[in-house]
Amino acid sequence: MDSKQDILDMLKDLAELTMLEEGDPQSFRVRAYESAAQNIAAQANDLGTLSVKELTKIEGIGKSTAEKIRELLETGKVGKLEALREKHPRSVVALLKIQGLGPKALKKLRAELGIASMDDFRKALADHKVRDLKGFGAKSEEKFIEALKRLDAQGPLERAPISVALPLAKRIVTRMLEIPGVSHASYAGSLRRFSETVGDIDIIVAAESAAPVMEGFVAMGVVESVLARGEGKTSILTHRGTQVDLRVVAHHQLGAAMLYFTGSKGHNIKLRMRALTKGWTLNEYALSEVEGGKVIASETEEKIYDALGLAWIPPVLREDQGEIEAAEKRSLPRPISGIFGDFHVHTTVSGDGRSTLEDVVLQAKARGYTVMAITDHAEGTLSGVGRETFLDQRAKIAAMKKELGDSLALLHGVELNIGAHGELDYDPEFRASFDFCLASVHDHFELDRAAQTKRVVTAMQDPSVTMIGHLSARMIGGRPPIDLDLDAIFEAAEKTNTALEVNGALPRLDLSVEALRRARDRKITFVLTSDAHHATELERVENAAKNAERAWIDPAKVASTWDKKKLLKWATAKNGASRKG
Ligand code: DGT
Ligand code: CA
Ligand code: CA
Ligand code: ZN
Image 1: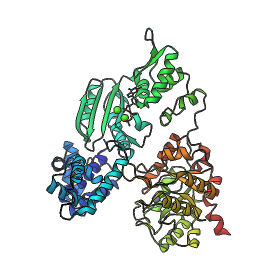
Image 2: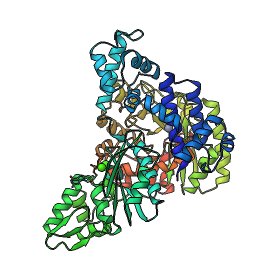
Image 3: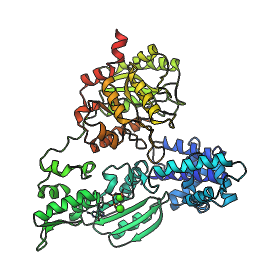
């Protein structure tokens, strides 16, 4: 079992709820939980077997935290956390999503006005009760109303961002596979299609009998309550408010179940219509004859698609966007595979980077990369550093290159910050001294469309900038995208020959599928990146690949799949050339 993740969840929840309890994000206790989580995250070993005494030997873990960890591992629950959850229900925690509403203000609003939910807060604002509270006033009332509007614009809050849903689904799958009699477990639904938010998580398990699977499922630490329990299906709600539907099916029906519950609904409807023209029906159990019920196929998705005269369709394409027609003509878009490089990678040089250059390089080699640019933050962001540090890093990289020989071309890059008016860090000469520059927006999210568009286009026009990072600067379920005239941006990307990043960090997935679809037919180079802040995060390029596949991007336009020579030429065309000249 993945005890480490359970422990990290517990500490995260403890930190958040303690912050609410004390009304202070800087409280000693909150920081203690956070630093304990950080140190545990860095532990390579399974912690499940460690005693309290052994646990306290880990830096940042005191006796009381160690005891809570043991309590969690032994009982599946932590008394202190349960008590905090009781006092600060999810509807209260949700209020922290409102920009500008911190734990201190929230504590006061609860105490003075009894606000314990989004609805309470809206009502209090409408009744001008917040404005009359000491320390708030008309200005804050206005600010909160604006913040709520922005929150509403993001769509329903109940949908979980993929950054929350995917790790959770993977943990559940891992746990299910440990249960005796289980031959298969995977997630389906919108998550398997790689939607950026999901209404709920759908898990499909193939097993000899359903009962032990259901038992194991509801006993998981993430479960807050059981919503429904039937013979083949159980639904639960997690502590963070995400619904998970578990379905247990017979092994020979797995393909039909996966196909049905992966959806999308529109895709399923088209498949069913196709089946009907052949005198067949398709449901979650099988593809079978309408008359007599003889089963045509049910065991695997491939067999069902094949029987319907179709190539197997990757889940990311199952959105009823012409994929069935393409599968019939055997002209589905080529998958994006064979990723040979990364061009947005942080090390400990960045304030928020957590792996050393050496560790990141080791990981890149293990992944078989041929080119990688190290791109720590320039000084324009909080996590950024000055020239001296970059020059030191450059020397280090130069020394490392000798050791690496031909296997991996290591580039010294930088992630420049795009200022409010498109200005970039340092001066043109220093920027040109890097092998590779990407530039991205990290602040001034509130500017209007014209100003945002202009600042990004201005950055593109800089001779040092090869790629724009996370174009919209959004955080899925958190920060909305900046307001951009996408067509103008794409036109400028063509004109200036600036590549666009497909950022694979799950909270970002930027460019979004929607933006990628709009850019798809342009002469633009796309680059899959991990934006890794830890060596293990290099694998996030796979997310970027999925996102690009969802948008039907032609792999030929994705630089990450090019051979070493072409890739290196592209990456250094702007700066490498100017420096040599
Ligand atoms: P979500 O959860 O809102 O992000 O989206 P999905 O696609 O995961 O939807 P969900 O969880 O309601 O159902 C999972 C899949 O089950 C869905 O993609 C297709 C299938 N499904 C559910 N209800 C129906 C239905 O009424 N008709 C058909 N054809 N398929 C359905
Ligand atoms: Ca779902
Ligand atoms: Ca569902
Ligand atoms: Zn970055």
